[in-house]
Image (cartoon, rainbow, N blue to C red; front, side):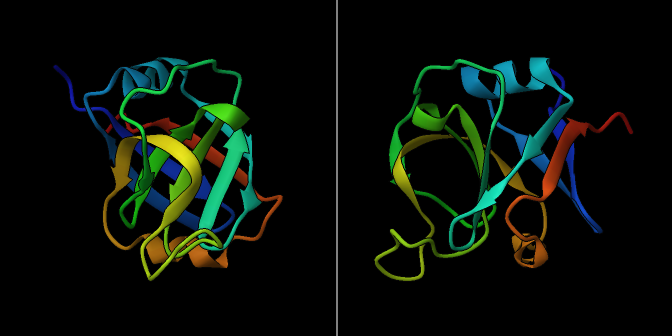
Length: 126
């Protein structure tokens, strides 16, 4: 199976991520490229996309740099630090999400991105 690697850009920030083996990851990969108007919730960016995917491996606490699918908002989420729901320093979603990938390198580069920014997720063809 090919490695599903994506490039994520927002403003002057660019990062790469690798998608995992979930069905959600495969569905997101098939839908690329995606242009998402994101909102910021603590150190999380999230935005609705035109996909209707089921929850696959539900969890609320995620890792730094995780990309996740949030079914109630039909949204992709990018976690780079604590959110208002966090109990300590861990990123925590508003409700269960399915993690479908992870940012390579330091996800803190996204701290400079404001809500209402445009985020683009596209296949890395390199």
